[in-house]
Image 1: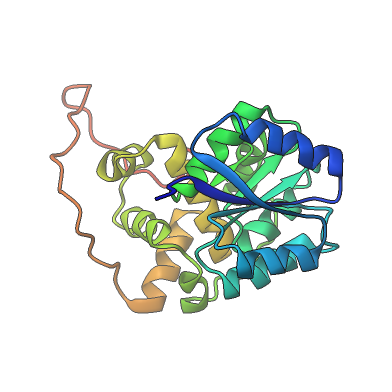
Image 2: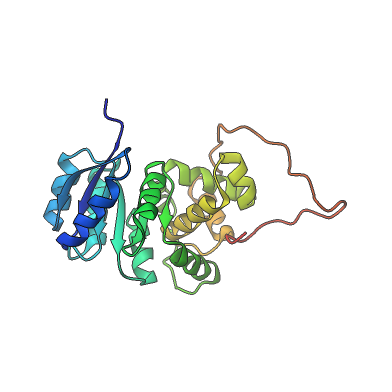
Length: 247
């Protein structure tokens, strides 16, 4: 049985496609099974190729974000990664709200692209680190006027892992505590937090918790092991609550 990650690649530059294919061939657990250059190619590949991951050039399909949204509605199991040379933060936010799982700059190395694909396939969101830092700052400080949270509609967009993170945020856990509880890195939790805020149209943990409680009154209970409280490194110092996505 072939257990490799099945990848589709759509971009309108043949030389770029050839470079990506060459880079991915160096990883034994990845297989590029389909290539294309247009929106029609992307839709056809997503419907017919049983893809695990679709790499979609931002400029290849006219409006790649709308293409991604269409694919997400019809092929929810295929994880979509936008490949772009743009640093436009608004495009990143629009892509995340459309259900894209990753946003990767075309100038990354082959090794970086492979790591991004592998983490996205595991269900972890990925945004280019420099962009992720700027986006978190904008979301937390209100640098962009985001649409009001749409309660249950926005919660439906969240993946099961994103919903787990949101539930733990609503319980007041810090990023470090959530990472320990879920067995993943703090960096990954920060990426999840940014993605949740973007999808829900909120700017901070308080707004996210309010939107969650307005939607169904209480967080889902998670079947996760309860860990003992983290020891206080400064004896006698009170534990401070975390209200920021940046810790």
